[in-house]
Image (cartoon, rainbow, N blue to C red; front, side):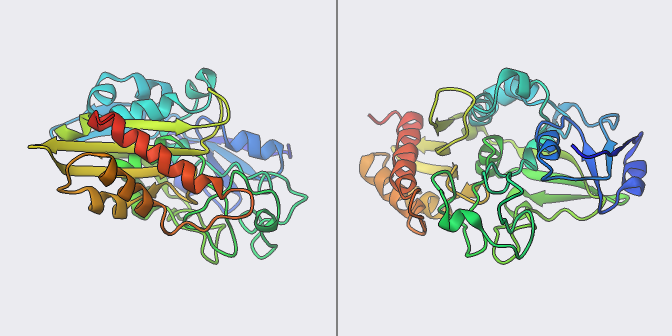
Length: 325
């Protein structure tokens, strides 16, 4: 790890004033410190922002608001989250280890970097780490890489479980930009790689994530998160699915579908959702939705298995929330 300066901020204005192109905000640090040890991240200054008052979970008649510094373990076990958004609790508990969940924060999870081995190895070209250097994964070993939202510049898969559930829940990210707040749909927060894979989201210098706002809808209680991985714990998703269904009068009235492990960002499948609306729950409708969800996949030589596996993962999640065997 290279030497760095350490600073603290008592409020958002102070944090923003200290922010530069060579500084990073520090909360839990479970991703940032790892990347600093690997020399992937080389900030000159770390600005500790954990004294800002954003470590609470609040609830009103419209939203549950989760502060940026709420620990993943606290959110996973919070009664309001468990009862109203089971998929989110399940997603959080499927990620990392107990120790990491006790330290990792909501804001940090939103900004989690890819686990692509070429990104984390500074001896390898990587457009995400060094723009214009090339993508080693495209012609390299790409078993864990994305098949949706890729480009000729990057195929790195997004690593978060939490963010897949938040995508399905249509959450908003509340930003502190200067002296004003801005609420951004999570689907607009992330950027697919395109020609600029080093630009992963819409944050600008000095922007702070204040909280996540999750809209309350009673039918979202009928939701689940299914994750397929190489081992039963402390492993990143090969594929995952966050699904919620509202079924009334033997018809699907509302539906949310998001996929993990297969996209360069947490992947919401509006195609699958539209195909399921007003359908009778059953294997025929579920299989059609799964096919549509992966119709635009562009697999590489080592990760073509993800297309079929993602379909089966989504199928299992839909069966679980609908009770269809």
